[in-house]
Length: 395
Ligand code: SF4
Image 1 (cartoon, protein in one colour):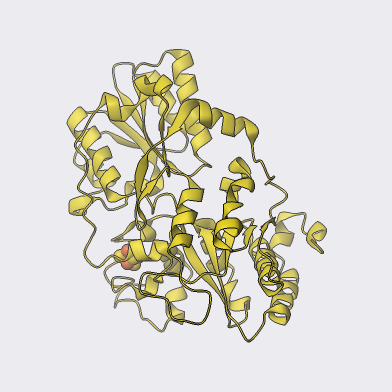
Image 2: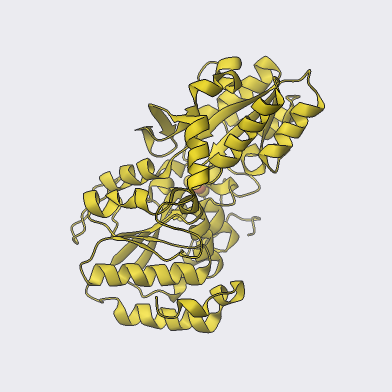
């Protein structure tokens, strides 16, 4: 793409002059007679858009729609309930990443509250930390509460292979890894009309997709080829820097204007068509697809998540420490499911900035560093909506 060779270094991907040039190109090419609704799948894109004010640089008729690509946000409450039950009922040491600690579970509980009540729940930075805890005390059962998209799945696979090689009998994995393409298919299957006809409630209007960056480094761009083929929508795999997002938006505008519909790759410095063959082979060896899995906001999606392969069943925490399925009772008024489907903006939620803030989150979208509500709050976007924050609450 013209100009891309100039954007070699990280500063250049945030360069104001280049950004203004891209903004001018988008404004010049966007057809004022139509609208462009582009869904950024990843929470990382959402945060780049808000942090750098990318939406403000777009013409009025180009709007970013926030997608479900926040791994903490799409985890259904019932799975957090189950993890807490594992720690409390079986007395295991539950290891997980920081974002997940404060996500509300049923009955206003959370992993952090369960820890305060005495459960052994530990925050880790990598799967290797969980292995180290298991090695340090062979008398303690250590469960890795593994979540995330295809990006974080290979490190879990490595941990399982290491645990097997070392004979770590006190290590197991509560597997909640999910797959991106089935979620994208579900959103597109429920997407509204392309014309100016009004969508029915619960439908999201989309003209194109900004595809995931980190996920795509693993799976490549090939798995998105069903999107133009089956749904007639263009996809551009986009990097996470602001100029990546803007350049990708320009590529989508061009495809839409030219009536083209294909998968293009803006993030060529990291993504190939076939992705990381080694990581994919590792995932195929250690995991198997689940028949179905619940996503917050999207419901049960067939083939959308992974479980441990039968050959690793002895490391499966769900088999080793069975607990009753969680209740997963959503907090009344929390609109996370609609925010995750792109049919509502965070500021449409009555709890936003009043009851729900990062200090007192009511839903996962306000907790996670990739959540759309957290992005609106952190970068002050609620002010543009004309919606004041609650008295005594400041961003
Ligand atoms: S503002 Fe809070 S309660 Fe509302 S959708 Fe976002 S996270 Fe859920």
